Length: 233
Image 1: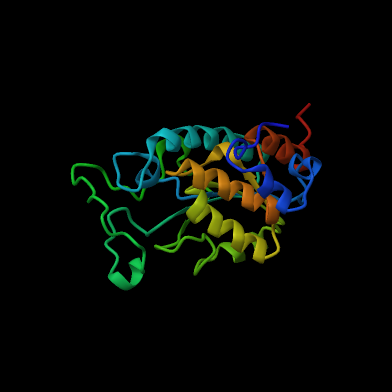
Image 2: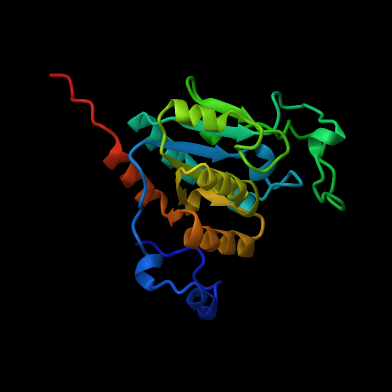
């Protein structure tokens, strides 16, 4: 098992409070046989630190981890979904669409930068992969077709990645859990501006809603449950 991202952050007393043992914490993936990859908000605005909501120090490593996972997902032919905010990159939402985020004190976006609501080049969607425009709300499920699309594909497990761990990733994981999907979170493929929030959120989700494992473990799981097409003779 890999080193868990919350090690060194969570006090032993908090671990004991869940009354869970080391074997539970280091458990293997327990999920279904029809996974889909759901990549949350891996856009310039969140990955790139030049944007007020971005954090390059963790965003670009997460993009690289997603690229590795995405390559395996495409190789195995599992459904892939991305989320971003609005239908086109320079969309200007009205206040009611933007919602009641606590955004005060944040510096404005540099007008010289390209639009931020664009999925980064490292993991750009290809034909057949669905991009969900989820507006300003955190969850990829809230007010979108995501649950319907997953049901159509017969999906029983959501592999959730993206940014930010404590915000939109966590909200999507919670909704996936509430829709009775199994949830797997490859921790290197998630990122946050706050490393404490990242670690604590992953720990909390692992104890309640999901299996938090490495990208390599996730890829091994996907390959194990994907039917192999016989090679041409």
